[in-house]
Length: 288
Image (cartoon, rainbow, N blue to C red; front, side, top):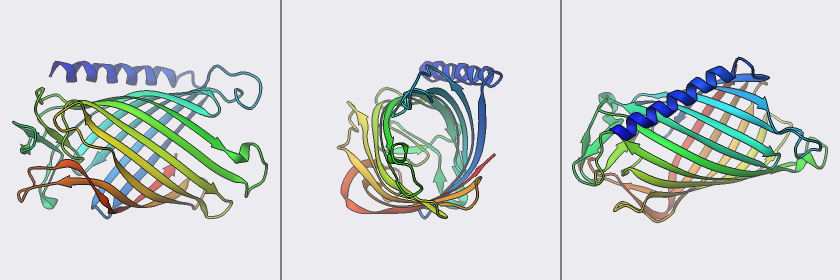
């Protein structure tokens, strides 16, 4: 519990720094996002970003260097999460990020969903609605490149990006050997996890302005009794730019990530299976 409280204080401090930075930032922007999928699932997110010039130099690799502070509030039928991230661009092809999140969950009986579950062992869990605080700290690095920065022209933009993150996830009510679940994401124990992303896409001056292939990889519960082999999600990203402010992203996904449950839904251990259909996700974004 003490660890959860300390992490909550860190998030509050980051949020305070975020608020102070807005007073002197050179660029500020916000967005509202509605997320849904065939899973089924739904979420509303409100984001705000402050972008400040930092470590800028001469030439295309350094002239746009900056620091972005991002705040995000997400609310679903079973949980609410607040996250704050700092993203440094020390050179045009690289991003370094540091951030964290806190949240809590509750039951949604119409769909028989529970946002927080806690077990007295590692696998069998029961609802712990509003019982404690989920917390997450993360550090990541990304490499990115756009051919449009070299060859001018509306039809010459091929984007490539890879992102790698190590994060520590925990639940304030969970003991050292207790399993827990937040937002139906599978059984976890307090500890380290890894996430990797690989994307290659093509940007066009059309309503369908981006088509990309995205591979996400996960290693959960590193060093615990729930440790799993690497799993992956494979998706086709299609983005529709209706106006400068309104866009829709559609992502059909395949996965090797499987959540094995018992007849009562009390066990949702993450395991690896053969590649199969996961969901079709859609994200409607409006820039403020």
